[in-house]
Image 1 (tube, rainbow, N blue to C red):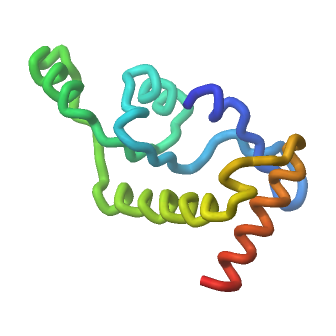
Image 2 (tube, helix red, strand yellow; image 1 turned 90 degrees about the vertical axis):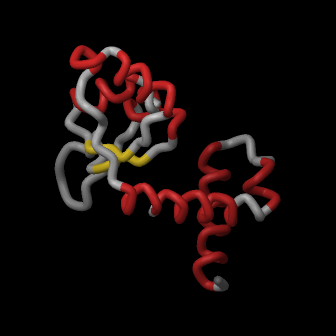
Image 3 (cartoon, rainbow, N blue to C red; image 1 turned 180 degrees about the horizontal axis):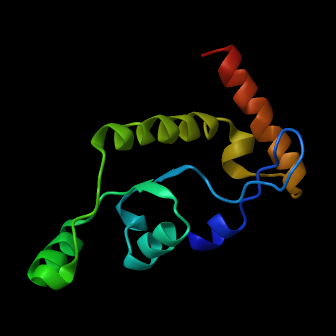
Length: 122
């Protein structure tokens, strides 16, 4: 997760440096490591990542040294399903699922065309 976040560069509409930090990050339990959470806190990125049972049990076992429970907003986490479904619908296009294109810009165009088709024909 951290190498991907380090590469984010979203250009601003007018003038200025590109954005390198998202407003909010949502993830599943696989991204719930202590290192990831520390990185997000340090960069002041709000996140919605559930805490797995084993991490929660370990934190509770340590008592006051285990730290506070992580904040978790169920309504925000449920919106992650929309992203997952959209990606699955994009993968229904064979060219997107198998990525025959060698060049990144050609693949980006393929994904864009697939997204436009989904948008026009739900």
